[in-house]
Image 1 (tube, rainbow, N blue to C red):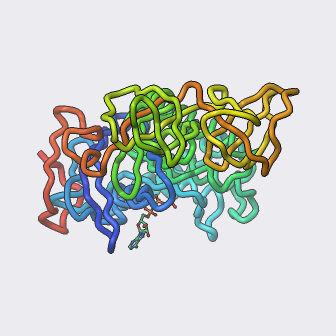
Image 2: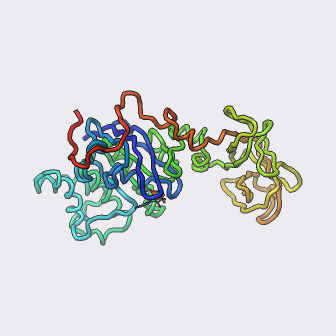
Image 3: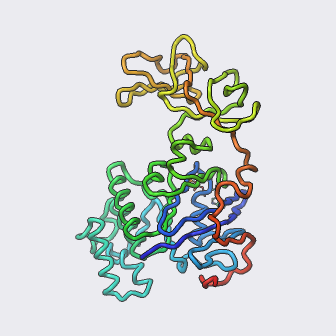
Length: 377
Ligand SMILES: Nc1ncnc2c1ncn2[C@@H]1O[C@H](COP(=O)(O)OP(=O)(O)OP(=O)(O)O)[C@@H](O)[C@H]1O
């Protein structure tokens, strides 16, 4: 089994909300889609799965057009969507759930059962074949759901926060299983997640969406080291401060924060700074920003002191930091500043999320609602 490159340049309008995105996922690779609640991630996956028809643009899988001048229905796309909830067929046994995809693809009953039993062993549930799904724990059901999705040998697996409903004990095991199986089967995948760690583990590229617009398209490593958008920076664990760049400092309200611009930022431009806890000091007597202490926590021998303004300072254990509710001074010592891009700059053609050269994608409204996945040429 091998995956196919997935390319999309689409616009999806839903009432007042519009999602626009363009990307390519190479054969067998994973694209991570990140963004805040309501950003349009599930809408994007729904379009890739064929559940929502794009208003304009095109989706291709290898040589096939899935949306554009045709609309291939979900069951004919060879694209499977796996959601947070396992959604197993409750009336079918576990083995019949697993055999469903192979049967739908025309395998004989015996062949489909053999495939299903192979999956039962692989997911560590060899004795659960005859059970109905309700006898399984949530984590076990999700393992079966992953196996059921992959048993159908999709060319693309779409994963909509597949670990969100799992407890801390089962999530690592299922992450590992999914990771192993995606690698083993070489399936192209798109993973919606709120965790940069998941993107790091699986994805070759990250697409960051906010309010339906792609605001950053980058590698997981680049997103972790030098995020170009405030949301990416927050996801990567930085404290993020918004302000205006002025005479070599970030000005936010009445406060002037020492910082270094890591790209061209004009004086007076809206900008954001990112900083990590060991680059912020906290003092009772002096500093750059005076703020109330929101929380104090201890982690691996360090005390973290968070201000109401979102700055987090790190102090050594034993330093007796200011307590929650006290006023204190916070000073960033290594803040990096970037220009805040306008929505127009972000959506301008040629920036960020264009498919690779050679990916022939034509924009424009779909011309026909018929078609069943015909070869494009
Ligand atoms: N059927 C619909 N009709 C109109 N608007 C919709 C519909 N479904 C979702 N929306 C809107 O589309 C926007 C994006 O929703 P979507 O579920 O894609 O976001 P999301 O990024 O997946 O969010 P979350 O992380 O909370 O799951 C939201 O503003 C939502 O209100």
